Image 1 (cartoon, rainbow, N blue to C red):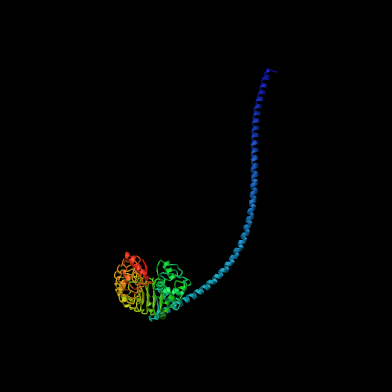
Image 2: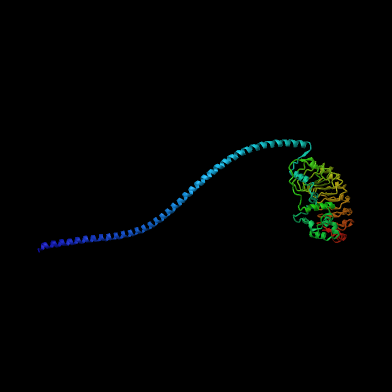
Length: 486
């Protein structure tokens, strides 16, 4: 072959091979890329299949939830239907109730009209009653009490005038209640509840009348009581056997005092008050004694532990023989001037300083003046019938007047800062003597008092007794049976 021709052909072939190689290379790269892409697509397909599976599961779940929701909706629709029916029933009931309310409102309007008419009638009647009461008050037939507490006490007194135990209550509240309770526990003395079932009745009456006498007779029960209560002996109050029995009757009622009674709130007439002989009204918060002047026949009044300062309405109660005003706020006792029949008077624990009015009360037997502002007791000089006198806790320095009160059976002159008791030698009727809290050293006048004997008691606590008094005089008195506390 021509060399010139062969060389170009070879060159052309070479170029073709090269071009083919290039194309092959390019196609080979595309194939690889396609394979990679196919692999990637296959991975995506796998992922999509996984996601499709998950989606199908979720769709199944949602379909189940949808079914449940549709069931719940069906239930709610059924409930709604039932509720609608119930609402319809309630609406029907409401309509019936409204009709009833309308009927009742109409009836109420009628009733209110009747009430208004009745109120008008009542108002008219009250006005007529008020007018009538005014006429009766002016005529002295009807009594009103400004102090409601006093009115309550008066109403109870009207009731208890014929009630068993009334006399015993009066005795208990004035004498016993300071030291004893009935079911309230021990005070200075024993609780008296059921005492009549624990002790012989005759013994109790004897002890109430004269405890000193039982001690003097060495009665074992009396001595036991004395020891149990630190040698504090119950005073002798001069009660009769009948009064002691009345006190026991009241104690047996098992109440500390008669109960408040549901007495009518109607008017109180003068004839109601004229029937009263005893008024027990201790610790009632009474301030005003207005209208007490109508209680003309009162013989005993118990008004201790109230807040009374004016006793002027008592000045005409001339039948009084017992009056207790202990622990009030009284300073003026001039209203007592005309009460000549008074036998027992309690004024302890007040603000009294002037006792000159007592000169005109010649029948006084027992007088309590302790705890006041008294300095002069000369008005007592003529009260020779006194058997009991308490002037302790005052501003008294001169007790010489007492020397003339020779009938005294008990004398309380405690907390007076006195030192000379020579005048006591002549008070031979003394059975109980309280000298506590003074400045006494020499008690020889007591030895000289020939009347002090077995069963009599003397209280010398709180005095600067001399050695002679302690070592000589007290033993001498004790040998005579006198009970000495010091």
